[in-house]
Image 1 (cartoon, protein in one colour):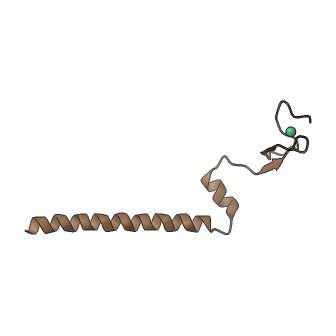
Image 2 (tube, protein in one colour):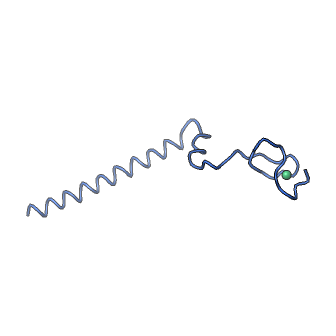
Image 3 (spheres, rainbow, N blue to C red):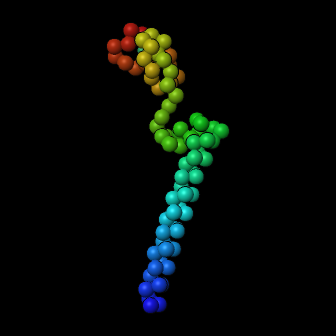
Length: 77
Ligand SMILES: [Zn+2]
C-alpha cells in the first residue's frame, strides 16, 4: 500500500514538474517575442541573420553589409 502510493506521488510530482517547466518555457518565449527590442530577439533567435536591404541596381533583397549593390554575379550594378 505504502509503496504504491509513494510511486503515485512520485509520478504526480514528475507530472507537476513537467507542466511547471513547460509553462515557464512558454512564458519565457512569449516574453522574448513581446520584447521592446525586436532586433535583439531576432539576433538571439538567429545570430547569422542580418538586416535586408533592396539592391539599388537590381532590387533584390540582400543582407546589408555596407555596400549598396548586391554580390550577385548577374547584378547590372
Ligand atoms: Zn544587385
